[in-house]
Image 1 (cartoon, one colour):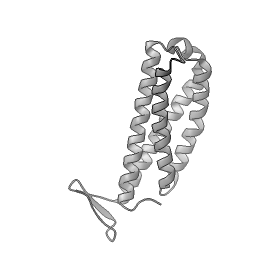
Image 2 (cartoon, rainbow, N blue to C red):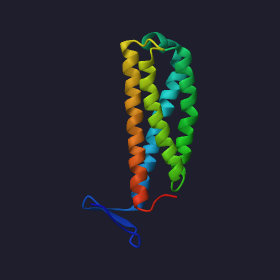
Image 3 (cartoon, helix red, strand yellow):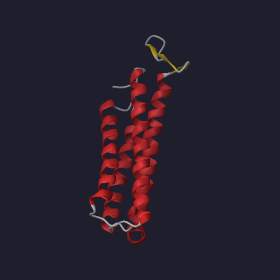
Image 4 (cartoon, rainbow, N blue to C red):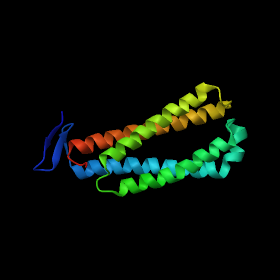
Length: 152
């Protein structure tokens, strides 16, 4: 059971007291984890799109441009995480974008427009699962921070 008290700036959650600042830190950590993974994946895809094409069965141009998209996205996530507190609407947009990424990843495989190898299918599904986890962590962090009065 969760109860909130604004005057004490604490909330009661699962029989323990959590400060709003700790909840905002959890949201920031989720955003920064997403940024680190997005940046690392972006760098990998930019640098190794050609060699990955034959192993994954995915077009090098697709891999390259996904990498090119992920680098500025990682920068955006770092910037959003630095804001105190991260704006509610922006975090919701990031969560929504991550959810769309997961759906698009699955649709890419189901569409027949690419012919990935087994490793390629595993690669696409694994990154989609990771992005789904980031979306969950960011959504949960935002929800909990909002309950504690830690959002704009």
